Length: 128
Ligand SMILES: [Zn+2]
Image (tube, rainbow, N blue to C red; front, side, top):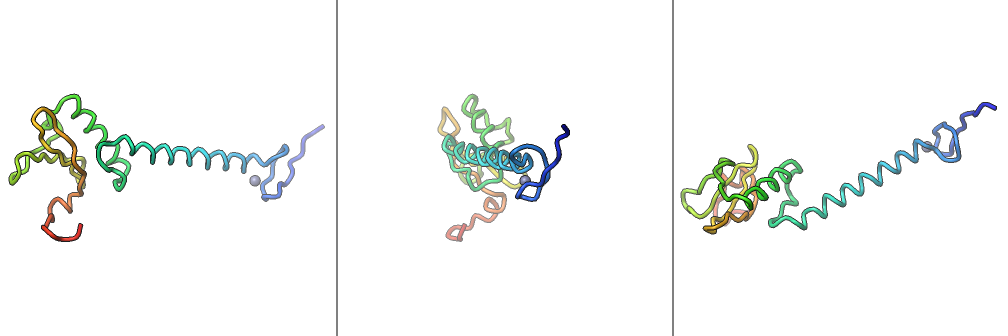
């Protein structure tokens, strides 16, 4: 007895009781939703707010922060002290972003991530 394809209410054709195309689509949707939730929850563990940043910047920043915890030598990330405030260290994340840290003597603490644009403009009193 040959199985015959049937047409489901959704418009797809296939075998069985439910449409496998739609089932697949639904499970993909659920999986993506879980991934998105896990990504959103991951920000709770960051010492500084990274939510507004592109994903690749977030991942790279987290890596630098965790490596700085183990060894505060910021120079291996091409970090530099600011000329006008020697206790502030600027570490390039990529071409567009900098991780700003404060030198606390024994450790280098992350403070914020700013875009290259903010970094160069930085006019006092101007809107961010
Ligand atoms: Zn379907």
